[in-house]
Image (cartoon, rainbow, N blue to C red; front, side, top):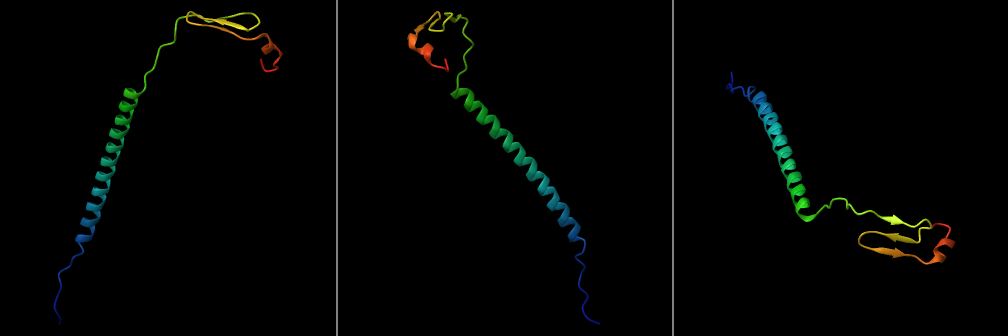
Length: 87
């Protein structure tokens, strides 16, 4: 008879379990990194962009639409604007 070699069959299931464990651990780490990245982007956008509340001033327009008044400005358009079909 020849030499008998030790059986390494028990290493296969252990290797598979380790691979699955590393896969799930890696996925969890990737998800956490993605969430942290999204939070960082949101914080940077909040620093960069400023939002304003709706003004309380009223805008008044004349019946023909040629004069528009507000607390801060008055806009007056020429009468030939009424000849434009899109106005």
